[in-house]
Length: 437
Image (cartoon, rainbow, N blue to C red; front, side):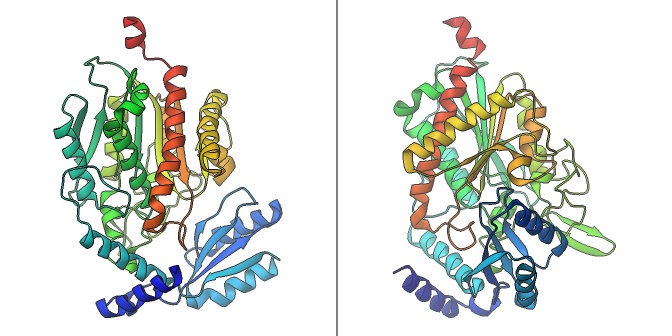
């Protein structure tokens, strides 16, 4: 059935003029399996040496996890040869990734037209929503729950889009409570990230009775879309669907490239290992720390929470992982056991709920060095707990769970987030409410 739907959508792509324009036409998607640590190290070396020849969509340090690689037609034979020479097993998963991604983009557009958001009521899980729709939802919640919900414009993106946070309380009027800060959509192509964060907002606000214990002694500050420009850019066409960075242009030696990886742009070990000084790279760290207005906004929100911000949780995809600092190098923080404990609570809850297995560990141990990331910065700035949550994959690229999978994924993830939140509120009680009790 799924194959028939994709074929139908591919035909519709032609009718709507999408077909030949997609820059991924003829690209092949491979799944690569390594059996030993040596093979995984060789694959990491290949990824570093290849530059822009191949796009490694996923590459974990855990050698039992399969990698996904997108290969353009011009480099297909050399890629196969490289893997054969290294005796690494691979499987062709999609012979023409461009056609699949065209169908996906069209499907999302069709669903948006068929089920537009009116601006009132809870956002559903039947499709992916635009940045504007998500902002409208936040504003609607503030209007419907004025004693418990507060929305604030905290800045603008490079292209002028409003960046908003929502503060969720239990309405008791007590100030100075500890805070859990959560955000989404750092990387533009990770659509399931803001979908998950929006679902969490809905649970905390509109399903308040079932989650009141999470808000008894804590407030939640949530920014569902950090990289608003990039997120919107991925919804224009199949050619932009896998865009990762922001959209601010950078010109070096007469060459203009667009965007910075916001998760390499934070001013803690900026431009360290796992970041690039090449403006055209997907992991470009920017011309300077906090060069991107989006990352500066997140930094400033963190600063306003100093003394109260206990847990920072940033939602990404994909990887089946919950990891914590440090990402800039192999060292572990002195409090790594506390970090590990709370992450395991989330991983265990998800496993019990759905059977999905998450890896738990430091960022460097699981994925390799990635200096200048938001979780490292939050931890260095005073958050006792700081995590990146890499959600399960979906679709061919891993970044494209079909709309039919959204409901399952966001509910599964909320189970883990809720469990972590519950542990945090007991492990780090708010001094204000503790005093009043």
